[in-house]
Image 1 (tube, rainbow, N blue to C red):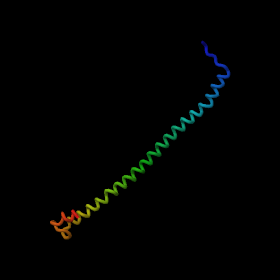
Image 2: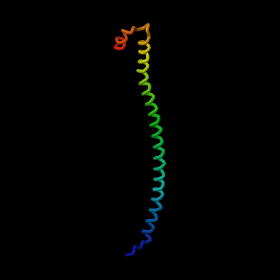
Image 3: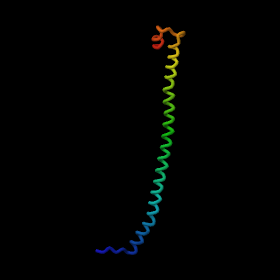
Length: 92
């Protein structure tokens, strides 16, 4: 059985090809560009968020460290607290 295309079917196919092909190409290119831009934007936002979080964590840990350094200074100073009183000072 031989398939014969009529003028109507050939024109319909060519019209759909001409109408749909540019839309598909433009859609594909747009998808690629937007995907790349969105990926870069998300990576930049994640980097900023990570730097901000790192700063907050560092500040969170620095506060107890300063307190411990101050306790060390007071405990090691001979004139402020006597050796026998260090445990009571640390418990307070």
